[in-house]
Image (tube, rainbow, N blue to C red; front, side, top):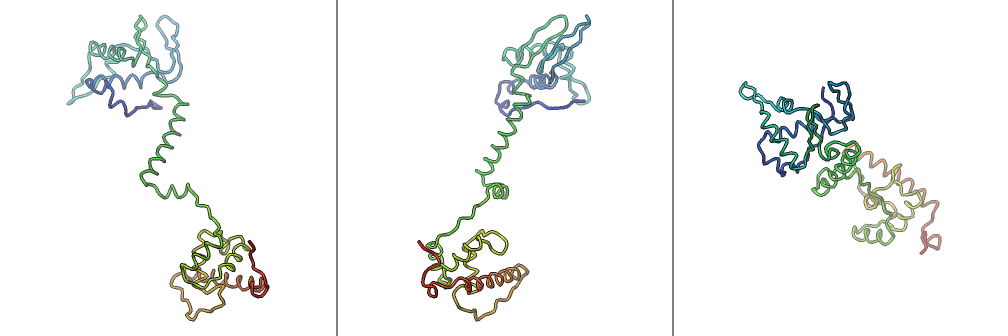
Amino acid sequence: MYRGFTKAYRKELNSQIWLMPPVYHRVWFILRQKVKYISCIFPTRKGYGIHLNPGQLITSFDQISQWAAWTEWGKEKKPNKKTIKAVIDWLKANKMIAVESNTSGTYINITNWDIYQHEDAEKVTKRKRLADTVKEEFNKGKNKKLLKKSIKRKFIKPSLEEINQYCLERKNDVDSEKWLSYYESNGWKVGKNSMKDWKAAIRTWEKNNFGNGKKSNQKYQPRTLADQRELENDEIAKRLNLEYEKNNPSPNQSGHGLLED
C-alpha cells in the first residue's frame, strides 16, 4: 500500500519534459514515486545490503518498462528497453537524475530530491502557501467574513469637539458634555457591553431625548423583538442618566464644568 506524497510544481508545465513525448513524463513521474522516501537497505544476491538514502532507487530498465505500461483498447502497451534507455539518458542529460549501472542493477538518484519531498521544507511551504492565500484573497476582496474576524476593530473614544460636531450635523439637543461625562464615568459601556459605535449611542440619546431636559410627545412603539430589547436598554440608560444627573449637577448649578481643559 502506497503512502505519502511527492510535490508537483506548476512550473513543470513550462519545462522541457512537457514538450517531450508522453512516455518521458510518465517515466519521470514513476521514478519520483518509486524512489525511497526514507533511508533503507537494498538486499543483494551476494548477501550484503546497499544503503539507499531518500530519493534513491536500484531497479532495471525492464522493471521501469513494466511500471510505465498502460492499457489501450483492452491491449497492454509497454515501452521497450530502448525507449526506456532513451528516456533515462534524456533525464540524465538534463540533470534531473544521476545514473550508475552495475551487476546489482541500475542505480538512480533524483537530483534535488528535497524540493520534491522534505518534511522541513513542507512545513515552510504550508506556512508560505497559507500567507500567500490570505494575501491573495485580501487583494481580490474575497472571503470578507474571515478578514473581518481576523482584523478586530478597536474602539476609539471621541473628543468633545467630535461629539459637538456630530450633534450639530444631526441638529439635535443632546448635551455633548453630559453625554461624554456619562460614558466616561461608566467605562464606555452600553448596558453590559463595551461601546462599538459612539455615533449610534448619540442617536439613541437623540431619539429618547436623553440629557436635554425634554420629553418626547410621541411614545415609541417597538415593532420587533430587537426593537423591544433596544427600548428596554434605553429605559435602563435613562434611569442611569437620571441617577447621574442627580449625583452630578449641571455646570449652571455647580458653577464649574464637568470637564476641564
